[in-house]
Amino acid sequence: MEIMQELLNIPSPSHLLNSELLKNKQLKLWVKRDDLIHKDISGNKWRKLKYNIEAAKKQGNNQLLTFGGAYSNHIAATAAVGKVAGIKTIGVIRGNEFSSLNSTLTFAKENEMSLHFVSRNEYKRKTEDEFLKMLKDEFGPYFLVPEGGANEFGALGCAEILAEENEEYDFICCAAGTGTTASGILNALNENQKLLVFPALKGGDGLKSDILSYFNNANKESQLQMINDYHFGGYAKIKPDLVDFTNSFYEAHQLPLDLIYTAKMMYGLFDLIQKDYFPRQSKILFIHSGGLQGNEGFKNKGIKLIF
Ligand SMILES: *Cc1c(COP(=O)(O)O)cnc(C)c1O
Image (cartoon, rainbow, N blue to C red; front, side, top):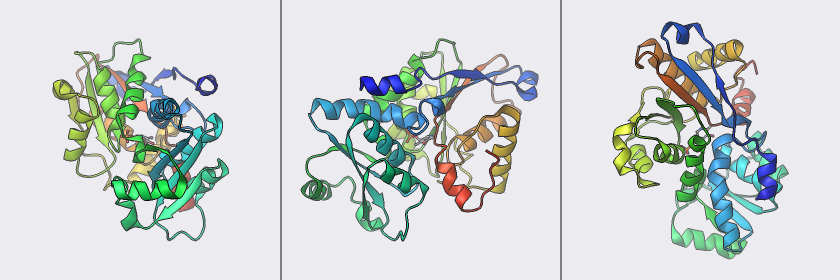
């Protein structure tokens, strides 16, 4: 673990954003650059792995098994952490129809992750005891990290994101898939702060209760606001509008966003700012949770990004 800490850019820096719109609305917006934590171990995926790895080591287990889709940031990050920290990693991948490896899976393989492909139906059994035991019979004892690093250890690591910050922010914004990151941040809020969560997928009701449950966050429900209007049709769905925004945002700020999570959130945040959602003088912190490796998949499908 000590070797890891030295290689990581933690605490990650927070950059104040300059823009006419922010000036006009008298708002201040900082971006916390968790995307800069490590070139291959993207932002919140490191935060979520940190205490999972510690728990595995405590158990004397040097093999992590986890789950993900073929483009998963979590699969890429787990593979990279494993390689750097000398831990064996097994990735159970959704879908067995691939004839060649995409950029994410090639990367995972280069980092010595064993890839195990299962059908979409089998993949649905990822939390069933029987299925997990079958994997144990096949691979030997492993420490299970759930899909997306979504467990209490994951949330614990994400609580540290805010603990690193000194500025008194009024609003924190984060993107959500499983909600683990949001759960950690919510837990770390002081009583004057609000958390805005931007889901990258449709249908956020279950998500809200997950965010309240990884930690016992029930007493913080009033500080949590789900912003459900900016998923662009669902997980990994994009529209030309989003791509244009991401490119012009890069042009204006030299800040790369990932199309699945942080671009949708920034688009939504700027829309809310336009619509005067925030009181004047508010201080806002945008968590750039990383995920940039995922853009390669879109580029390979012909989506034009200028970075
Ligand atoms: C995985 C990921 C998320 C979602 O995090 P959860 O803890 O699953 O909600 C957000 N942003 C980026 C860039 C990610 O890669």
